[in-house]
Structures are given as structure tokens and as C-alpha cells.
Length: 137
Image (cartoon, rainbow, N blue to C red; front, side, top):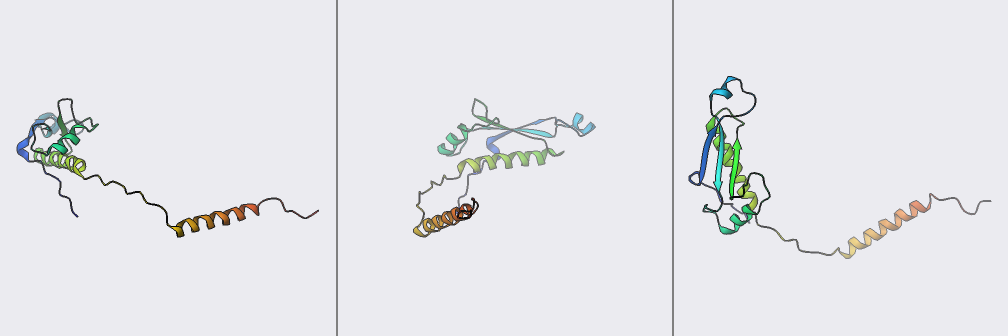
């Protein structure tokens, strides 16, 4: 059974070009290559269950207004940073939308119980041999 997570379209996202931080020489000072991606969860076309799970996240990228803000500045190209930000947003949505698999409680088999007890007995015998020797005066 394969699960296909929903994909956020670029029409629901707002991009703002900003200047990148860190090393990069004069290019950093002149070119706005970093990107802020803003995604309003409440106004999106995602199913209500996924919206609720996104809003329940304890993530610093989610502000109190229900807007996810992702900053991408790894590349010198604005287009690559936009692509990176969209990939990170879709990965976040995919992580939240995975169905939760409930663990079915099981019991150990009779053979597993027997093997466990045998190994405990064997280990106890090994430890008993470490004690003082009895019967020698």
C-alpha cells in the first residue's frame, strides 16, 4: 500500500527575495538571492486533517498566525533557493500527512519464553561457578 502525500502548489505560496547572510563576498551585498517562503496553512487547499496537524506542530517555522516561513539561502541562485524552499515545505507536509500506524500488542511465543528461561538458567550456572570452591578443606 503506497501513500501519496498532497503537494503544495506554488500558487498558494508567497516568495519574498531577501539578501543572504554569511560568506559570499560582494555578491551577498549586491544580489537578493535568498528567499523567504510564506505559506498560510489555514487558507490552503490542504485537507482539514493535515491543516490541523500542521498547526499543531511545535516548530519555530510556524508562527502564531498559522503561517509557515521557510528561509532558503544555500545557493547563489534565487531560482535554486525557491526550489529548495518548496521541496522543504512539501517534505514537511509529507511528514505530517503520513498515516499513523497503531501498534498491535503481541505476546511472546512459547518457544521464545522457553529459550529466554534456558539462557537465564545457563547464565546463572556460569555465575555460580565463579563463587568459592566448596568441599575443599
